Image (cartoon, rainbow, N blue to C red; front, side, top):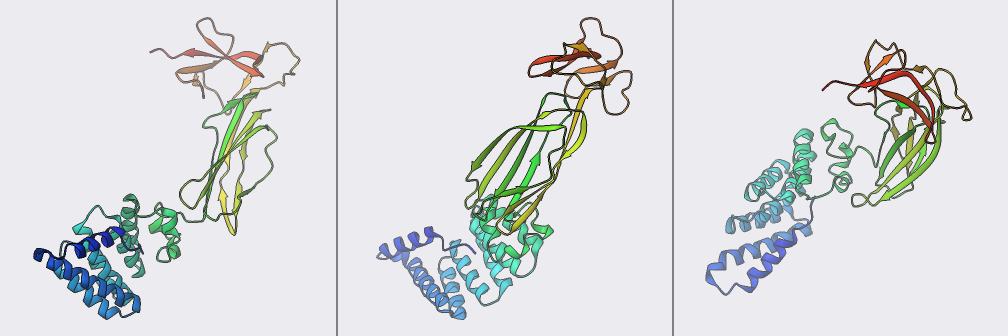
Length: 329
């Protein structure tokens, strides 16, 4: 549950300073009842706390904080329905307060109504009453992190990870970029375990970005670049991310490399060569990676066609075989 709102303590202190004004007597008495209720709650006398907070609410009915205090006492006494009703009263009095939504979510979750609890918790998180990671460690919510109701609201594990790869096929000799993002709330070093890299890809560069991420978490992004060495249709991954005792699977990314049918030595001069594309290429086909262009199998195209070109280290290795022409506007 949420801690005592500091604003309430400041407001109550100001009431004691202003108690010489007779018009403030009800507020002074409400503050006195609140103080008695808080002492009773600390002492474990929940019945007295409920009564004291009830008197405070009657004396100051516009306070959005007092219903939450009575809700705490109801919840401590196991009277969850009344605790939820008190939190709902607080939300009505101050719809912008995420604290009331947070406490309501906690008490609803204790009652086993997880769908309603997830909705209230999302509202609390949207109001920045807590972070999703701190809520995930709250004993009212931590047992339910993997429940379908909390998908998208709480992280299902102390380690979250994912990978993104090329969104379209690449040509031989070009660069393939893969990003692996791992967020950990365990405080332990994150390690990756995975299969060997496919033979058609050669790792050429690795950059690691570390960030503090959300409070209590560490965010690590690995940017990996590969050189496409040969034609292939392969999977890169899957991996496992390990941090402390947590293990999370990272799905593989799909990589397709287009290449000439005949290998071309790096010492050979540029020469035409047939291009091999997956499947059967129709007479004309859209070309992946070439927006607004189509490809046609056959002889070299007359101008203004644009030829596909295979380059290695910025040097042309093969051209022709497939040509690209602009799509008419």
